[in-house]
Image 1: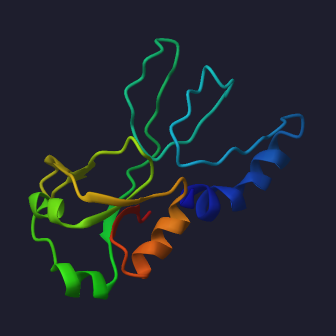
Image 2 (image 1 turned 90 degrees about the horizontal axis):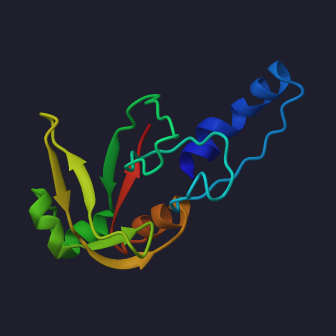
Length: 144
Protein backbone atom coordinates (compact mmCIF):
# COMPACT_ATOMS: atom_id res chain seq x y z
CA UNK A 1 0.00 0.00 0.00
CA UNK A 2 2.71 2.56 0.72
CA UNK A 3 4.05 2.11 -2.81
CA UNK A 4 0.63 2.95 -4.25
CA UNK A 5 0.01 5.78 -1.81
CA UNK A 6 3.38 7.48 -1.98
CA UNK A 7 4.86 6.55 -5.37
CA UNK A 8 2.14 5.50 -7.80
CA UNK A 9 -0.93 7.63 -7.03
CA UNK A 10 0.71 10.93 -7.88
CA UNK A 11 1.81 9.56 -11.28
CA UNK A 12 -1.50 8.14 -12.52
CA UNK A 13 -2.49 11.46 -14.09
CA UNK A 14 0.47 11.12 -16.48
CA UNK A 15 -0.79 7.73 -17.66
CA UNK A 16 -4.37 8.97 -17.96
CA UNK A 17 -3.37 12.01 -20.02
CA UNK A 18 -1.07 10.05 -22.30
CA UNK A 19 -3.76 7.42 -22.96
CA UNK A 20 -7.13 9.24 -22.73
CA UNK A 21 -9.15 6.18 -23.83
CA UNK A 22 -7.66 4.02 -21.10
CA UNK A 23 -9.93 3.33 -18.14
CA UNK A 24 -7.85 3.08 -14.95
CA UNK A 25 -9.06 1.29 -11.86
CA UNK A 26 -6.64 1.38 -8.92
CA UNK A 27 -7.00 -1.53 -6.53
CA UNK A 28 -4.62 -1.27 -3.57
CA UNK A 29 -4.08 -4.04 -1.07
CA UNK A 30 -1.27 -5.67 0.85
CA UNK A 31 -2.99 -9.05 0.38
CA UNK A 32 -2.01 -11.51 -2.33
CA UNK A 33 -4.37 -11.18 -5.31
CA UNK A 34 -4.89 -13.88 -7.95
CA UNK A 35 -4.52 -11.66 -11.00
CA UNK A 36 -6.17 -14.03 -13.48
CA UNK A 37 -9.03 -15.08 -11.20
CA UNK A 38 -9.88 -11.47 -10.34
CA UNK A 39 -9.50 -10.14 -13.89
CA UNK A 40 -6.51 -7.80 -13.60
CA UNK A 41 -4.66 -6.71 -16.74
CA UNK A 42 -1.63 -5.16 -15.00
CA UNK A 43 -0.32 -5.36 -11.46
CA UNK A 44 2.50 -3.66 -9.58
CA UNK A 45 3.73 -5.82 -6.72
CA UNK A 46 6.37 -5.19 -4.13
CA UNK A 47 7.22 -8.89 -3.89
CA UNK A 48 8.06 -11.68 -6.26
CA UNK A 49 5.70 -14.64 -5.77
CA UNK A 50 6.06 -17.72 -7.93
CA UNK A 51 3.97 -17.42 -11.08
CA UNK A 52 1.51 -20.30 -11.27
CA UNK A 53 -0.05 -19.34 -14.61
CA UNK A 54 2.23 -19.82 -17.66
CA UNK A 55 0.42 -16.99 -19.49
CA UNK A 56 1.56 -14.40 -16.92
CA UNK A 57 4.64 -12.30 -17.66
CA UNK A 58 6.69 -10.65 -14.94
CA UNK A 59 9.20 -7.80 -15.24
CA UNK A 60 11.29 -6.40 -12.41
CA UNK A 61 10.86 -2.63 -12.26
CA UNK A 62 13.35 -2.00 -9.47
CA UNK A 63 14.57 -3.40 -6.20
CA UNK A 64 12.86 -1.98 -3.14
CA UNK A 65 15.09 -1.99 -0.08
CA UNK A 66 13.40 -3.29 3.04
CA UNK A 67 14.06 -2.22 6.58
CA UNK A 68 13.01 -3.73 9.86
CA UNK A 69 11.49 -0.94 11.94
CA UNK A 70 10.52 -0.75 15.59
CA UNK A 71 10.17 1.84 18.30
CA UNK A 72 13.05 2.48 20.70
CA UNK A 73 10.76 1.26 23.49
CA UNK A 74 10.46 -2.13 21.77
CA UNK A 75 14.24 -2.47 21.54
CA UNK A 76 14.60 -1.32 25.16
CA UNK A 77 12.19 -4.04 26.28
CA UNK A 78 13.31 -6.91 24.02
CA UNK A 79 16.82 -5.91 22.94
CA UNK A 80 18.08 -5.14 19.45
CA UNK A 81 18.17 -8.29 17.28
CA UNK A 82 21.65 -8.88 15.92
CA UNK A 83 20.86 -11.66 13.42
CA UNK A 84 17.75 -12.94 11.61
CA UNK A 85 17.73 -15.91 13.99
CA UNK A 86 17.35 -13.63 17.02
CA UNK A 87 14.18 -12.15 15.50
CA UNK A 88 12.35 -15.31 16.61
CA UNK A 89 12.29 -13.88 20.13
CA UNK A 90 10.68 -10.63 19.03
CA UNK A 91 7.09 -9.62 18.43
CA UNK A 92 6.33 -9.26 14.73
CA UNK A 93 3.80 -7.14 12.88
CA UNK A 94 2.64 -9.13 9.85
CA UNK A 95 0.69 -8.26 6.71
CA UNK A 96 -1.37 -11.46 6.57
CA UNK A 97 -2.49 -14.44 8.63
CA UNK A 98 -0.59 -16.82 6.37
CA UNK A 99 2.68 -14.94 6.77
CA UNK A 100 5.06 -17.10 8.77
CA UNK A 101 8.41 -15.45 8.10
CA UNK A 102 10.21 -12.58 6.40
CA UNK A 103 12.69 -13.27 3.61
CA UNK A 104 15.65 -10.95 4.11
CA UNK A 105 18.90 -10.39 2.25
CA UNK A 106 22.15 -9.58 3.93
CA UNK A 107 24.74 -7.14 2.58
CA UNK A 108 26.24 -9.92 0.45
CA UNK A 109 22.88 -10.68 -1.18
CA UNK A 110 22.35 -13.98 0.63
CA UNK A 111 18.71 -14.78 1.38
CA UNK A 112 17.74 -15.70 4.93
CA UNK A 113 14.42 -16.27 6.67
CA UNK A 114 13.44 -14.58 9.91
CA UNK A 115 10.45 -15.77 11.90
CA UNK A 116 9.30 -13.31 14.58
CA UNK A 117 6.40 -14.12 16.91
CA UNK A 118 3.29 -12.62 15.22
CA UNK A 119 1.34 -10.32 17.53
CA UNK A 120 -0.62 -8.27 15.00
CA UNK A 121 -1.85 -8.95 11.49
CA UNK A 122 -3.14 -6.06 9.38
CA UNK A 123 -4.12 -5.89 5.75
CA UNK A 124 -2.31 -2.63 5.10
CA UNK A 125 1.09 -1.26 5.95
CA UNK A 126 0.22 2.15 7.37
CA UNK A 127 -1.47 0.54 10.40
CA UNK A 128 1.53 -1.73 10.88
CA UNK A 129 3.93 1.22 10.73
CA UNK A 130 1.84 3.01 13.37
CA UNK A 131 1.81 -0.12 15.55
CA UNK A 132 5.60 -0.29 15.26
CA UNK A 133 5.85 3.38 16.27
CA UNK A 134 3.78 2.58 19.38
CA UNK A 135 6.18 -0.20 20.40
CA UNK A 136 3.98 -3.18 19.56
CA UNK A 137 6.67 -5.02 17.60
CA UNK A 138 8.94 -5.08 14.56
CA UNK A 139 7.62 -4.43 11.05
CA UNK A 140 9.31 -5.38 7.78
CA UNK A 141 8.80 -2.25 5.65
CA UNK A 142 9.78 -1.31 2.12
CA UNK A 143 11.75 1.92 2.15
CA UNK A 144 11.90 2.77 -1.54
